[in-house]
Image (cartoon, rainbow, N blue to C red; front, top):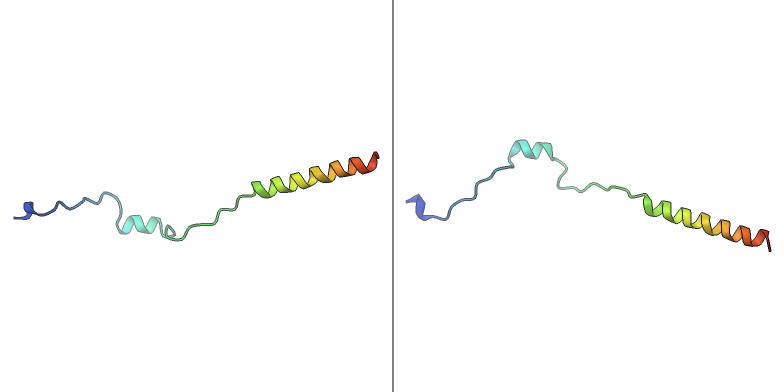
Length: 58
């Protein structure tokens, strides 16, 4: 009388072969984003240029 039980979900993906391909899935990799650093440096360079122009021509 197995048809009276709750139907078991079928596992489509997973298993040992899939786990071997994604061995580091449990540990998230750190991906560095350099765009904020580049924006801060560009902003500082812009302000230094503005201050130099004001100082040079005043």
